[in-house]
Length: 535
Image (tube, rainbow, N blue to C red; front, side, top):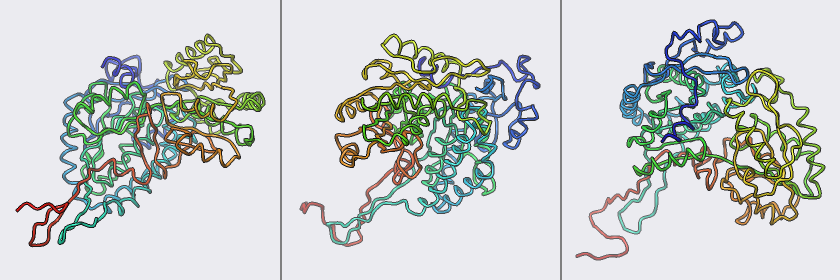
């Protein structure tokens, strides 16, 4: 649990008290005129980090920092264990109310949540940019994704249900009944501090569940701001606020959320290493889990590929969000006939990427989220060099405030080099040279993760081999598009060490519900199945 705590829950800078001299009011970004829009989201110098129908927070005070300059934005008061337990109890009580609301009416509430998010989309997108570090258009796009899932969930609220099956027994009806699992625990990662919660929250709500959210410890302001928007909608509809509860906290909160038996589903997004810890704790109580973990994603470029599609796709997928998407392209496999040409083109494109403050509308590439990530970047480059890699471009920390590093291309490594098989959440692209289709497909599948993959080709036979049982073993299998940038209409998730979970998509609602097979005898006889006689 020490490793579990350090990896996912405690990567924050802490201050001993709200009045700490080191972070006085004048130093906080929230108090500067250019960030006055933060007040539109209900944020101030000191923010409550617990919501269960009312706001609170009596635990440790943490400070959120801007990755672009490492300056403090504002502070958040985390939950104590007593507040967490109170929140769980209030969520249980709220479920008794929410479960009785008809699904289409639950859908109407979710529609209103989507509309409320639309009204704050620019401010909330700016906050994501400021606190997480992704560029503004991606921050807004992330909020839009939550909005889109709300719209999607509204339709689902009138469609969820099981079939009526023909019974072999006269005078009997056989149906599938779907009911909510109860409380859905949602633990999200720093790289998508809005969208991942939205995927889970909107679908879980229309199914009749209540939600308890624990966001990433390094993006607490985003968790608070999103919860304020959702809470206002619940209040307008005279519903218990604890339907959408939120606790900011440390490892103790996360561990109890995993272990608590009333949590009908635990949705965890994060690293594979921590995901294993979560899986074991949830399985210990025979609980249900939805895991969205790492990805070591590959683009494969064949000799017949349209290079005018390849280059922008590879650049976007490898440097978008500064390489911090779970669907980021980390391996670029190039057929030997196009290898040198593609490397030259991508290296040229890298040098033209507009780097700057993430909230600047012209910026395409921002900082890494933490200083620890910068050190991981440097360590990975050194390992790649030691294992035979050649640095084509990048490889350095940028001389500017914040956590900026150069987007990096490395060639010459064996396909099975240890560093190539290690998912590093930084903008490093390993370029591999292959000869045959079988070789490329095998290399794609040989890593432990199985999230996203893509090939570039005009050969339709190859396309369907790629999509078939001997092709990609990933949950996302693309053709002539990047590995990142999935739509909400399809199921999102992966296989193997990616965890096997799926969010969004046509049948995603089933994960948030429990299924019962119901047989109803409306006759006066008692026939048994399979023709059994027991007389």
